[in-house]
Image (cartoon, rainbow over all chains, first blue to last red; front, side, top):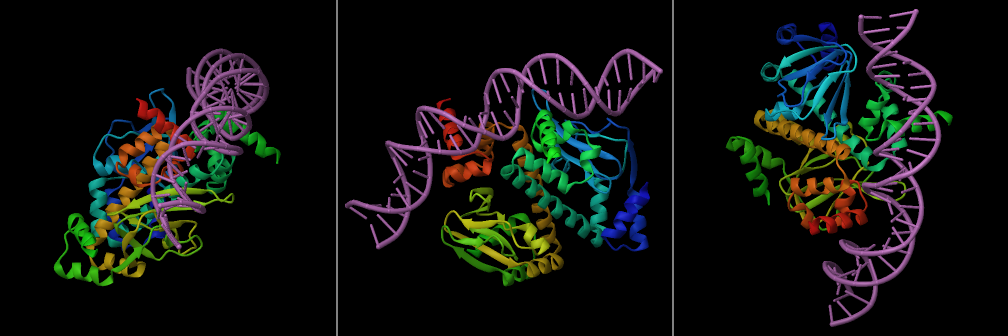
Length: 192
Length: 192
DNA sequence: TCAAACTCTTGATCTATATCAAGTTTTTAC
DNA sequence: GTAAAAACTTGATATAGATCAAGAGTTTGA
């Protein structure tokens, strides 16, 4: 499955053969069965992780035991807990697989080495981070300004395909509403 | 007021005398009176902006004319619209001064030039971006999991000092609640 | 220095969404 | 293939926070 990451790299950046091989030499392939954890609350996250196949969710569990989905990541996206990674502190998040999933992992030391050695790789990583930040800003904006129905329509529009492969209750959680509310909204909007 | 930025640079990074002077050569000093705009909706944002003194808010205005505060930035922080800057598209945001404010601006071309020329500067910028992303993630998490009262307490705790210099109605907007609700929460928590 | 313009508070009422409680349908695993 | 588990729907009711309205403080600028 490394070819998928390879292809991603080719699209996003320009690398020499040697650089490309250098990157591959550090890659760790990991497979997760549905429901299996990539990261558990309390553990320190130590990787940079790219998904080549499948889908994971990042979420917290509150005192009452309810789950709050922070994000979904599918193939051709990155996942992990940047705060835990950067601060080397136990994560507040859980990450588990919604589907059988395959990933390419790099330990953070190796990843930083690659960033240092390969300027094009470093630039790519920075661009991704910028886009992630912009996406986070937009999500904050949406959560402040939109109604429950608008949030759902915005989500479907922004991430077509997600709605069909992710259980509704998880989407509801991601959008900050109950599964019942989402169910009623879907019924409503289906009519129109 | 450039000395404040100079001091910030010294704290965050290691620069040679020449690099330091190179950076200063591109700096544009800008002053804003209270209520004056730094960016208006529809304009394309073209700078990287550091606040040396004062406080600005970034917000949108919806169809009904209500304002939604996306963020506050005070001295020793950066401000601007990264999405507009990166995509070179008209901004959805307004940025204006809550207090008389002084900034150091760099046109984005110059800023990128500095990033290219000075690796230490580039690293600093990336670190800031990472932290911004983490802060955005935490804000999303808070908006999903906390009650109105918890959001306010979390805000006061995280940004001590902000509550006293920013009008309550703007804080309420930032936290995604009405000014009336925030007023009642403050009354409640003052009792305890 | 004082009137106008903000800013904050308080009360009454309303509403979007949550919660609780059954059902029904779909998926999973042996 | 079928029983158990998971996912989704629907209805009744509750509630956090919104909205509307008015008054009290506070700031601002001529």
